[in-house]
Length: 201
Image (cartoon, rainbow, N blue to C red; front, side, top):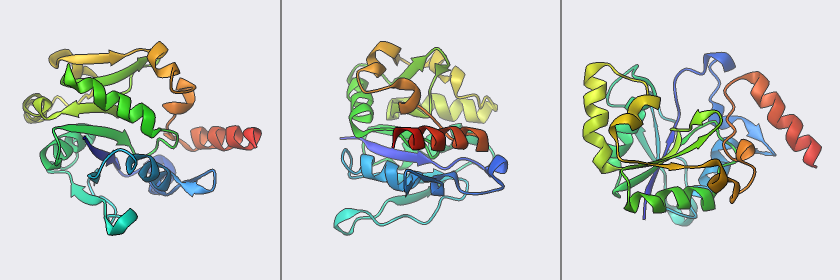
């Protein structure tokens, strides 16, 4: 069993401060889509960030937990640190709040690989995808030290961790990797996703 953390990120200035998890993709918010997938694989879901949204209600009377960053203005690394500290299980699946197409099957696969690694991260031609990855509590000392040193780049974190890289070929077994790992970083990216869904229907 793994915990899961949805990282809500910063101020979303490119979206005028709009909560990206509230954006509607295919008739449902990104947050609702993510919660549906995560509730299939874990009993411990956290909404993590500078100002995490009120914990939404899940099935069977359960709630996701709102977990604030313990260090302000330190980006995703602070979110990862807060999630690892608060997690009820040794492994934590981390997902950025703007990824509408992550699936339970793929996230379960990432978590399963932590039996042989401290961190499991997908890697494509675009590089590492550290905000759709799985981390064990063994990562916490390295994450904490890097925060203390002001070394906030998550991409370079894997240089210091026993890391299992998930290749493009592995990702492809779970669907189109561009779709699976798509995120809504900008209004233009959101428009592309809407156009893709419109074309599919």
